[in-house]
Structure formats: structure tokens, C-alpha cells
Length: 225
Image (cartoon, rainbow, N blue to C red; front, side):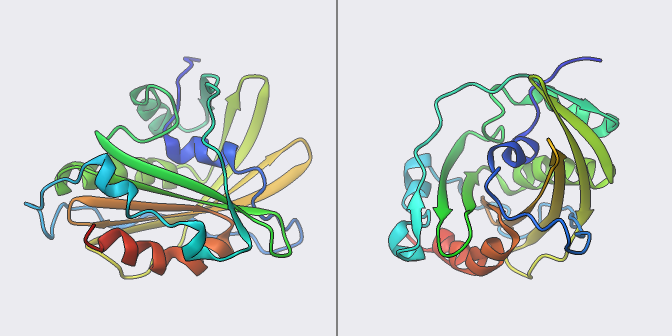
């Protein structure tokens, strides 16, 4: 088995260990959407600095949210077991921290309003076709493997992926629920990606928090800086 550093869409689930988990709840349904670089295909990509101004802030979210400091540690290489399509994509990311697009900005928050959960936002910019193809391939690969395992360092995590319905925002939408089990604990992470022109928005975390803040994140990502 070859070792790879996997894409951010997989590794995000490893980082969000505080996301809500409901062992007694119904099995989640997971993600993916049609691909095609249509809509504002000639829109000019934004700089990372411009996108950083479009990220959500504590002021946008309210007093129950605290911004997390950006991690400085390096991820261990990750082995994907039982999903050849995803394993083939794993070698593309150099750090496993973000998708392989030139312009990016990201932020993560911890929510303390009753349950300990997290929500993160990532913005990427490139040509519409490159964003569509890159994200589409990742979501399709994950959706093609309802069950697989990832091994990060000495930790083995059992993954379940199912597609879910994404809101009709932007030109393209993808959404999925990822259930992962490790050390006797079961957690659920929702990931929803929206492409509008040359900007890609990904909101990940506790399913309820993703649903609550997705529209706000999308609106701010489209606003002029």
C-alpha cells in the first residue's frame, strides 16, 4: 500500500474532532453534484488577500463563536484503504491542509453555545473550469466509495460517505455527510462546496452549523471587497 498525503476534503474530518456526534441518530446521507465549468467562466481569479476579506468573522457569527488559531503542525502521511479512486488523488496535495489551487483563504471557529462543535470556511479562486474539475473529481471519488478506511500515523479511521442535497447557490454545488469512527467514537462532518464564477466556497463541520451559516458565508464570499 502506497502512502499519500490525502486531499483536504478527507483531512478536514481528522481535524474537526469536536464536531457533533450522535451515535443513536440516523445514518447520514452524503454528497456530490454535476460537474461542468459553466457560468462566469471568464471571471478573473481573486487574490488570497482579497478572499481573506470575504471570510466570516466572529462578528458575523455572534458571541458563541471563538476563532481557532491556525495549526502549525504537519500532518502524517495518510493511507487510503478500500477506495482506489480517492487513493489516486492523494498524492496531489503537498501538505494535506488545503486544496491545490493558487489563491486561498481559510478560517475555523469553535462554537460553545451548548455543544462543543466546530465549523470551518475555505475560499479558493482559480478559473471556473479548474475549480469545477478539481473539486468535482474529489467529491466524485469520495462518493464512489460508501465505505473505506484512512490511516493517519498510528490512527485508523473507518469512513462512511453519502451524498446529500446542496442548496441551489452559485453555478455548481456539492454536499456530503462523512461519518467516521475511531477509538469507539462516532462523529459526523458535513461538507458543502459552492462554486460561483472563479470563487469556490467550502464550509465544513457540524451539520447544523454548516446549514446555519452556509448562506451567510456564500453571500459574504460574493460581496465586493
